[in-house]
Length: 68
Image (cartoon, rainbow, N blue to C red; front, side):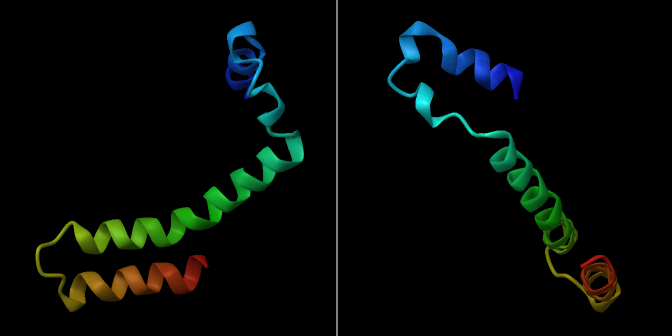
């Protein structure tokens, strides 16, 4: 977050400096990311195969059910 703050504080970016996220907004985004990682992992598991089989699909489904 410090890198973003430094980027936005540069004089050349004064027109967008007001768009910086507050800490609460940043924390919310981190939580959303953490939640969406679970279905993303399942989707990645299924998309790594040209033709997903039950032996791959069921563990991916179980991952969603257990972790979510």
